[in-house]
Length: 127
Image (cartoon, rainbow, N blue to C red; front, top):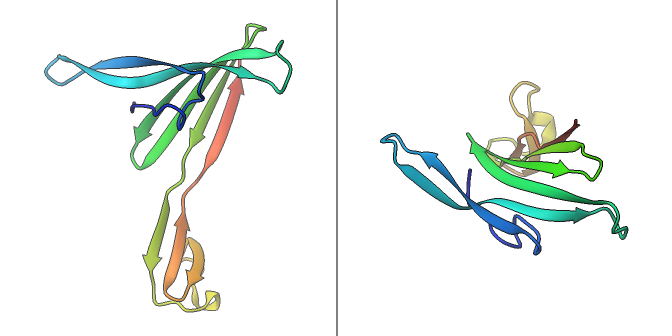
């Protein structure tokens, strides 16, 4: 978990809460503003208001945005967003025709520069 930034990670109407975890020595470690809770309105209709609880976790090189959306019907919608990583790699290629099929997993931006993209997805599960 990481600290969330008001107005960047959560909307203006969000309330923020701290989280704690046990360090290796057993002492509690505080993460400020680790959880935000806010109301989400579906369009201009005030009747369809749900409550969203959001955290962000870092696993490896990815940031996972996890939303639990509690709907008025009693259902819970889980949303997980995975951020992508953008890397520029120097290369000897100057034209896309020179790239071997098994050699590059990106886009040639300019001579000697390839943009590598990792997965970006957002999955939802409603229970």
